[in-house]
Length: 618
Image (cartoon, rainbow, N blue to C red):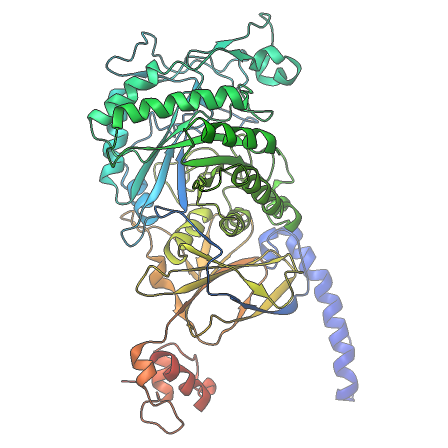
């Protein structure tokens, strides 16, 4: 870096400039050899980190929204057979809920870990092939119930219509599995194409790849025939299976439907038929399932949702929940999916979509009638089975958690992740070990720490810096009465010094998540690797929080954290925390309790602060 000057004061700035110049060359060079060596960005080398300060508070104690009383989190299992492939990736072997190993202890423990403290989590059984499958049940009125066909170009979905079979035996196994697993709450998608007539296309028509150029591929006529579904519904009632909700079809409506483009009038009429059927079977039974629709990809189809809402309310069959699907990162083949997962402009699309959909629905609910819940019914980041290295890696947690925050603020009740296992977007890897991917732990922390009441957040920068995201939920129904902030740093070049406040609540614990790189499948909570034990047990993430300490928190680039505030304990309110009091901790006691790290940090202010938060030192 050059020779030392005899004048130290002159030498220092000269050498510092040379050091900076050298680092500016060395760091990108190292990152080019191994992107993980650039811990600042995962893939993009950034020599220097800037720091920004922002204050975050709760301006009003009244919640702006409330999430589902059952669960905000939801997990999906799909129908896709082993032969399902996208872009030469074939990630579905053994992951269909028709052949998934339901006796796998890790699978069971994973669901329970997402329903902490005796809570619940939704398990959704549905997907694109839901409208192809037949049911083999007593009195099913369908003699043809067969396995899925080989992949074909005769349909847009890529399998033969009428292939795929759910037997009553497998339905028993799925319900018994969910009943045995703590917290599991079942949702099932009903075939909504059964009985309709598909237009006839010329024999050589490629509907799988060229449906947009061949309208015959997605033209359907006639009403839904409920007879096959009725056999499943009656059997479910007779067995007293507590299915929470039935969905009506999957991605069949409007311009953005896949296998069909059913009009609001046709779909509403058939949905009312389903409503009447469920009512006739369950009557006033308190376990009567909820009904959910339309489970469609949202592409600005506001007019369809307006008309469907008007029609179902006027016909006396409004849905309990209206759902939409979103794949924010585009197709799994898109190499830009990685960057999109952290791009504020892309993530902010959820704000617009959520607001537009809510207005389309709620503005058409008759005065005095309760509106339906709105759910994110399916989201996996990238469609066509996700993208390896993105939707199964640390970078995925940024769009995933931001979606939770944005859509809960928009008043949505539930968010369903595609998938629990299967594809390249599973929360668990599709192996016998079911190793959890980073998004599993993101969801586990949310389910554990975030309450139902959605609080409005006020920022000193007015929200101008879109790379910094802040959300808050409170837990007013709990005796603990806690409030939790979720902070997300999308930037690879800026850290944030965040001043948090929550009224008279005190910061009790922190949960900060980092990783070795954006494409890594490993994450660290407060520096400790998150992993399952050799016995298949998932970590108790709540117990891994660290002492809250000062309410000025640091959020490093490309990290996120949950910060939990709770009321002062009774002992802390009664303590004498004045200077010189016997209630104050000694230096060694402060170190033992994790309030400070070294004796150099031991000050009277630190002892007083600990006392005010935690009470007298015993």
